[in-house]
Length: 362
Image (cartoon, rainbow, N blue to C red; front, side):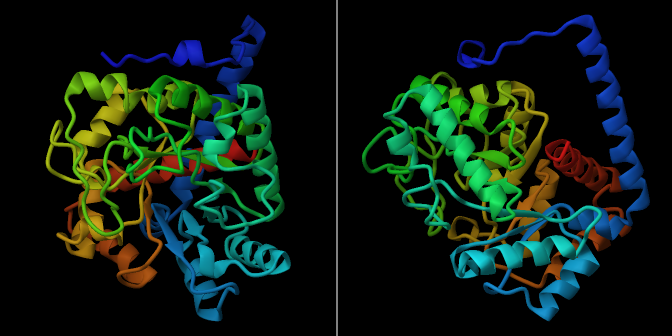
């Protein structure tokens, strides 16, 4: 049993009268109907494309990029350092991306943690180690300020906060986390998530099942997390369990192998997804870390796509592309048409992604 302090950590009051409960059920039914209607109107190719987050080449949307965005309508686009020009250029770029699919635009995403991982330097909020020195109320306030700031640039999704625990100074996550104490990290992660709940920007905790105990950089090689079940449940798991209990809409899987479950990297591991879904009870969107990193060099690019989908991942993230967006989506479509992946599997993930997106704009 995971030692989940989520109830203690969730500081939001849970007040519900019979009237508000009935209204919530009505809204839920309406939202489900909307998602089903949208899925029913989409082609298989469009549903498959919803499972991808693709990169762009520079600070301006090219004609070719606009064409494939319009044709494929992927789930998201990620902007990294080479995509950021002046504030006006960033806003023009996010507007152009959204305009490629006005009815259900791709989620424009970034990694804006502050400090080591920063894309926009006029961010009003500090990095996680600095936030960790503040009160929970101040963490929530700064998180909200950052989300509003990101929304002003046109962003829909921030791959933050980091929920890893940096157990040692040589941790791969040192300098990016809320600290080395799992319970305190869990409290701070929830405080951050509470701060962004009433904003339009979606957030994602990362990197499940916890990168903080390893020193290997997964950009270069595959780290291995050697840990027993009790240790993991009482340490790495706590911030993620607290975030799930607090309603986080998305969890990112990290590139690390956990022999406790199997030998595969977590990003393509059915066992890891099962722990997140069944043990932690997460029902939201599961996204991979960048699928073109050194940790996955033992597998071919299309094999990685197949394994991630088979594992139960919803959203496949690319910071660098091993092939064209058309080729990656078409590969999934062909596998469904050959009966190698069920169409229901694709629809399930596309539905989760669309439901999350619609909930964010209510």
